[in-house]
Length: 304
Ligand SMILES: NC(=O)c1ccc[n+]([C@@H]2O[C@H](COP(=O)([O-])OP(=O)(O)OC[C@H]3O[C@@H](n4cnc5c(N)ncnc54)[C@H](OP(=O)(O)O)[C@@H]3O)[C@@H](O)[C@H]2O)c1
Image 1: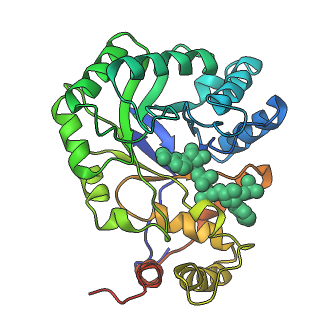
Image 2: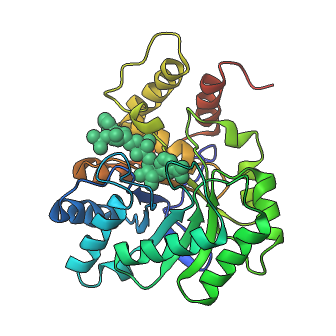
């Protein structure tokens, strides 16, 4: 590593718990058989991705509400000791057809449903999936406080909250939030500008970046339309990937991990070989120039 490279650690802390900087996301997980799903979790653990991210809503539109948690619960039940080897994150507050519902009663019921589906006694980190504009921060905080006091959750966090919403919720709690989960990738650069990554550093939150590959658009197979943000970003990622002997997906993951807001990349592939290959992100040597070249391509304009 040269002096101009950006250091990327393999591990970090979320609250008091040690986690890998790569983590496994279960959004696309429902429909997996238990052996297939077990192989994915084991592959993630092999590369140190011990944080497993899911949500009550995952599976809706396919197997149904709770479908992804149900699969993960069967995986835990079938593999003694596996639950303890993972740091389990789930989310609540999206209940179709109403967009968002973070009333205290709903958050508590949702958490209890998740515990049953996941076949576990406690959620390590419980996130509010999206801000419910009709639920007061006081009510959301009361629900989180109750769940923590009852031992149903260890820690709490948020997802898709603005920095002002995070601060408002924190002001009503007498324990510290540990995580935020925004969309963040070379195709989703708003968190760099809108305060999301600043509040994470201010409050020592772990930043779990969702869709770090733009949901599959930052991969070797993707054919972007000429002249688009995707095409500009992929051209820069390809040049770095060729130099480093890895795929564009690995460079994109490294780019997310290079930011100092305690970032973790939630990988979403359902392919066991790709899960294992994700660890190549740790080998990418990104210079500061590389990192800014990707950002300039994403912006479509030079840095001011
Ligand atoms: N909080 C929120 O609101 C929110 C929203 C969305 C997601 N999330 C979390 O973020 C996690 C990750 O999101 P994501 O699944 O969108 O992540 P992603 O890693 O950006 O995208 C995953 C997609 O990319 C494809 N892919 C990955 N590597 C590939 C490669 N080398 N070649 C071709 N295709 C490739 C995968 O297909 P294959 O399976 O075929 O490899 C999959 O369809 C989710 O599981 C969830 O935990 C949170």
